[in-house]
Image 1: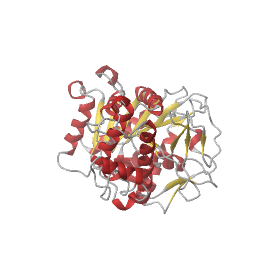
Image 2: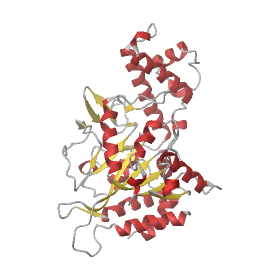
Image 3: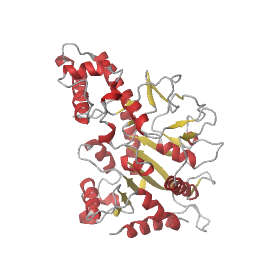
Image 4: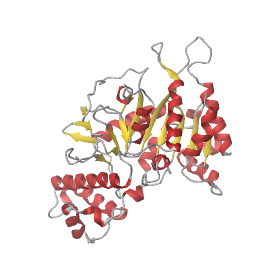
Length: 389
């Protein structure tokens, strides 16, 4: 298996499933789901952090987090040192156990200050992210997503790649035909929204055509018109670990994509925080997990970009496996695995081994078909674009 084989198989799949190929009869809808990990965002801009980079926060960025630093000291950590990923995992695990098992709560810990501290950490991570990456936000005047600074050539290619898909599907007959794109992401950022919004007209918005697994009560700074989506028009964007825009208000959710300013008070986002034992019991995750599984089971092609499938993501890997739970499910299904590495020796075998950890029957039955590309998403886009009709 080579990178050329992967590109050829991908473009062949697109050609075979065009919404219009000269035939008059309707074409069956084929769902293609992009599963995006940290490497997807890094392909856009190298300043986007991996999990390790995002959750290692310098001491200078901890100013104003007195409650967190007081807890750090109580747990035996140095409140004047950098906050590390391992320390965050220990702190969140401590808070989760105190919330889950009130009978063994620490002397001065209760449900309310657990909530306060977890929200403080979520907000800290959002603010730190905004200091190390180019900011993407929803412009309150144009209702479009903006990025600080001009687009690079690689970024234009990525937008051009996804823009091509608008011609692979249609709902002109009131029935969805061709190839529909869906997105499932383990990232917190707004990059996918920005890309999708760049692929539609300047007087239109992705919110009319994108279902998030939950319906926000409102999007701050934006008039939300679409509450119920039509199947022939809509695709899915589901964030498995939460997102910087997702704000919980009582039993409802709001999205806040606005530029962070002194006037726009930053609220704590709904995030899965690193822990020794991940806690996905919040209502948000209960709702979107079932939606993600439905999307995967309804998909015929899965494109995994920059997700390393770490063993600690046991539940997330279980969701990923729903694309093809058994070998029989793999008939007529294909996986394209694009990693964020650069043609290292043995990389192709490494990628195949990663896929077989989640889909163990691939090695025995060759189902579903698996194609791997080891030279990064940007190069995959550049290799694929010339052959996309």
